[in-house]
Length: 422
Image (cartoon, rainbow, N blue to C red; front, side, top):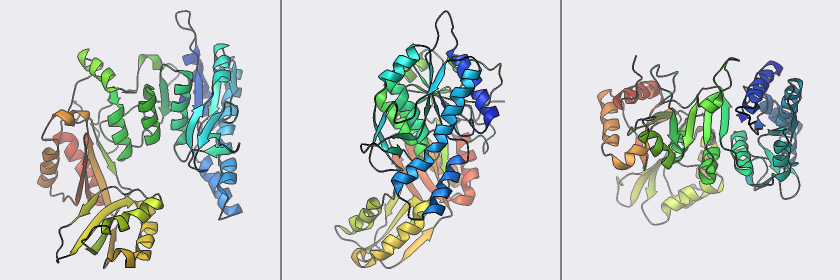
């Protein structure tokens, strides 16, 4: 079970979480569930700790930064263990270095390498609820390391894999995965199940329900995920009866469809992302290696490039190159490209941060033609101009003006028959 920052924001909410955990661990049909709980820091706490680091030293050492920011999860894991004990449960906290959760790569954005969990498993078998701080682990140098923002989801999946859990429940401030953002489309429907592949695409193109790395790890390790809400009443249905959205393999999805528990649709959901920015480099030399000179420095700086268009040259030997980067990286990308102007040989940089990416996602696209043409026709009929297109096997994304985002999402949600019936 994993609980995010909003679920852990204060002692009252932690007590509510403790009651949910106690109910899940309770004996049913004579058998008690063995439960591990992964927790995030209280909402806003990590930001507060990051600001302390910046005030102490603007050029902070990432290793010491990790010591400070990992303390937020240490507090909530201890408080949840104490609260569970007050409810009559056996519980103890396990810090990342005590399990240990071994990590590799850089501080502040480490990656989980392995989890040695026999001691924690023995504790769970003896009836203790294990409470684990998310987001943190132990580096090869024996120092505390953190996994980057959203890392608690990844911690939860890794712990679930390490203990051989039947399921990993991600409790959050939404009650499942919807066909699109319910705040934009009132008729958005909660999905009973989504495949790993679909969830990976939805997470990568703007759906904020799960962190991308956690879904990729669940897919690799075969961990069944469930997304559900921690903001439920004390008489809420048990998580064992699947009130949220299950993230499952293609094989399990096929079984659900065969049993009539899910209907097969060509498109599963519509996602949007306003955190994109467009860069156009004009009059780039049209010769081998020119594009590599543009994207190599961006890759070296860990700036992710998404959509790329190379226009047909207006003048012989020259072309315009258009691509998108995360909005937060726009200034850095622009500065790096200006620095490489002589090597790349472009004329001008034109930037636009007032854009949005709209994506339609569905595993049914693999075997069904016409999904892209429906998207293009529906947007055209409403006068929405497409500036760029990118595709994968189960996704079509387009770049449009930011102020047309909500209209585009509503139009496409209806066009693909995703609106819930009254």
